[in-house]
Image 1: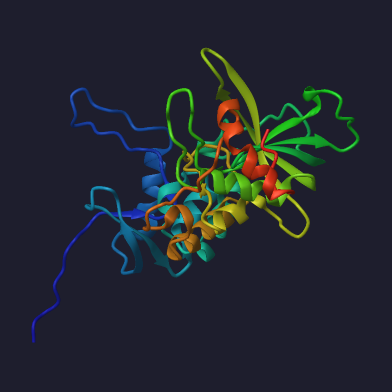
Image 2: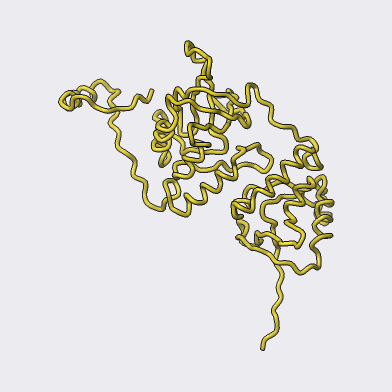
Length: 318
């Protein structure tokens, strides 16, 4: 019988990104990033020349390097790297893992952040300009992932009383621009309308996770708060949109702040993708036809049929 065949390949540890080791052969040589060599020694000491089982999930974009988990008898080496502050969670590789395998990595990274270990030595929790948690009533839906909320106890006598909140780690399809002729992205109107049905006029609990400067016109920015919105029995409205295929999860950089429920959002998106729902569907998108009667001449031509219809159900958009 034929003997065993041996080969070698490069494996990227799923869910983990360590500092880059420099290359002294280049001209000029590239230095190692802080803690890169310590991270390499940490892994080398525990894995080199050991026979271990590996679970493979996929490859990198080039198709050259495999992505997977090394199963050590004493635990997950990825979690140990994170716990010791020798790496960060890698967003693109953690998405390949089973959702049930992710929590230990998240717990390990959060522990290293709290202790400001090594790569997190300068880490500080995000600073918020307002309360991190508040109750309020949803007054308006601006887009498929952004709302205006009137905090409890405030009287709505001025627009400044409203708080603009975007759903953390959720990206809704973008609305178009009539002035430039840019069309809506598929499911933009459906996502916005679903968010309206779920939220408008209802009491909501908001947990703010982070803030960002958002470009708003030429040379202008707006500080936007991003958070999780809970209404009734729905713990995360953003997760509802993602699960129904009306929105997707935001692709974050490894050092970005993100939703505290980010892994739940990614898991919901995986299920929606598998079911080919909404934005993940392979079918051609058919946009709903809407008669825009803001033009007086066009409105006049439709006035007769509208009068004959009598009472008509409609949605006040703005």
